Length: 269
Image 1 (cartoon, rainbow, N blue to C red):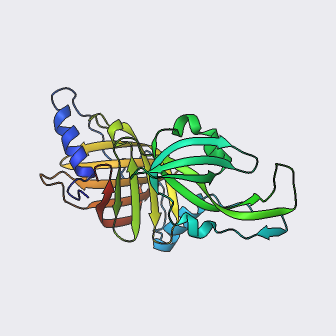
Image 2: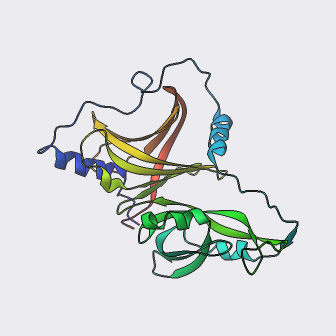
Image 3: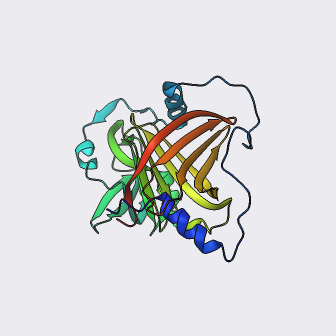
């Protein structure tokens, strides 16, 4: 694994390469003074409150309408499922979407998914993605007709596009996967980055439409989510080894700072 490669390395390379062709704008990452979110006085939440915000964005598994549950070994089997891989095929069946997933070593897995994954197959097929799994209740029937039996299955419930260039940053408490880094062309305020961030308790948030701003020796990747903004901030250095800081803002007020985010995995690994 190339730990020297970090968000900052990509920022430096594109920053230098773009100097001769496109002048950077004078945008900056969201701050209390410059945030597009309206200014309002808010109390500073603690870490528990921030984690509650993340939990509120998660999609809960629907409760089962059936009364009889069949046992399933899906939990043991799911431990071998890849977190990052390629969606090779997807076909809608009677009770779930049936997919084939290829991991980074080339091994393929038949894995069930929610029907939303089949609905997105034009977008996802052949793409490198971060798979999200959840326990779902599915009918334990031979057809789509109700039979009064159901079972628990670990299904792919979401897939975050990572593109050609992606990185995973962590400080032990927070882990953030950033995808589609190649979408930034070196011009401030551009890019179409994806974000998948989780705390230590497994509360996760997925965001899209991230952009990059590099100014005064600092590169910031930022995403908006209603009144909240999420920023990964890194200094531009020759080695690219400086840690990254995760910042969360609410209405322009900083409510979370997670320092010492380091590279733990990447598309270069």
